[in-house]
Image (cartoon, rainbow, N blue to C red):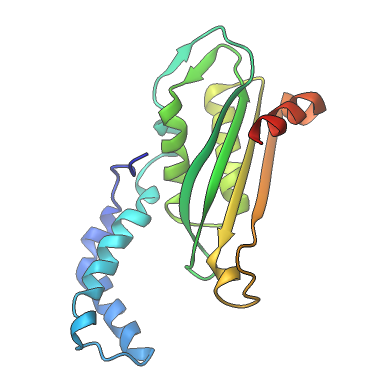
Length: 195
């Protein structure tokens, strides 16, 4: 899926100041800010921030858009939605997959809207646990399904490339709402279909 069209306009409005700060950080870590490879780095970082922090510009509840009346009340699963985010503790990247299951109660959303929702929620400083809960809460609020279950897998650079340096380790979080919370058979069906 292509990235969302949103841009963080606060970054755009503060472009010059952000570029100055990036240049100063480069200098403070010991770089020669005037060497050829770094001359355009502050501008590149600022353009990247416009994109990777674009989630601040959208209301995730609006992303689901128009819902459709549909009398389908069986399990719907959207799996392997790739995401990229930034850890709010270290500003280091983390990335992985989101899997969503829901049991409609008369309302469904277009399938691409789930990927857009994931993009809006993940394109800001985040923690994986909050991503998982926010997706579940918004789907529960907007679609009012019988139940929602969200599973998020993540590989965190703050754990892989620094600190304990546990390369390839995965963090898995889940959130359950409605009938997924009370029906272990439904949870098991969802989890088995993810494999």
